[in-house]
Image (tube, rainbow, N blue to C red; front, side, top):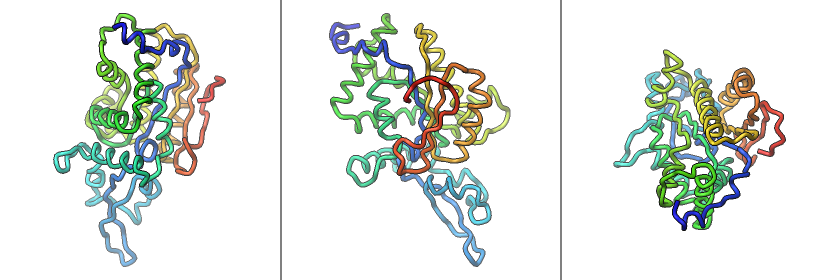
Length: 301
């Protein structure tokens, strides 16, 4: 490590608590303008085009009497949640930039986990993005990089880099990284980016399942994947401290499925980990309603 990097490293991270976070993207980190394309049944029985936000869809998703996908094809309904280009730009990156710009300009309020995600990045903590979208990990990672470049101030980015250099100095002394750009790229690569309806993620799940999984099942798989990831990292670095993992989501179906999954399976596999679920379905509650699912650790996650 260069002498300048050593001077910039925050060695205090050696004693930092082990808190990790799993964030849903839509209506958690950002209020995205992406629309779901449905058909709505009118009073006279006619089916007409009807586009809705992700927040509204979480409310009406099971109302098959009044709403359906075009041609009964859900892929057509979620076309903008896949990796397509509009005017030569990936639709997810386009909508992410629009959502961030609206927050910065004051045109819209931050989503419930916007501030927590910002702080996670500044502190250089490991995290996972787990979304029901169908985007490739590289695309989601690019959106996170844009968040860092545009949301964090110069001082916040400097603090983030001091923390990242500190982690390397304390736990990877033999690393060969020599610049801030390389360290940031290394940090982003350590995190997980799961679009559970993507081709990449479905291929990953084939190790466990023979058929396509529901978004709820996909999120469960993604959560376990991230927990295994951080457990391995802490073991490889010789850290023996309590671990806590927070998960945020605004969809009641996902929340219930995740709560049950943690209680019935993850708590048995990882009895020493404290799991906390944040219900962000109410946008008026900052960071969401906190639900400690399992664990007795005295941590204010």
